[in-house]
Length: 81
Image (cartoon, rainbow, N blue to C red; front, side, top):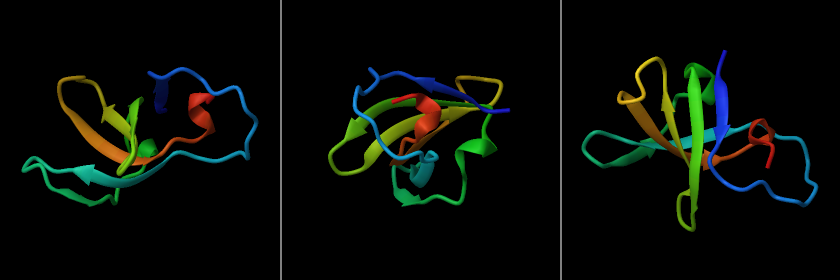
């Protein structure tokens, strides 16, 4: 089961129900590529910020928080925004 952790303040406005989507990820060579992974491929997903160009920014990891991936996409209702 994936733990979704919101590192941002929740929004107060109402919106449609939607799921979190990973669109791109940062490779070990600092190249942004299209992502084949989904948030449910990880045990933990933390929303860490919003970028004007990349969208919502996430860090995702399984058991070791020092072994993680960085993803860009759209945060969904799992984060109670």
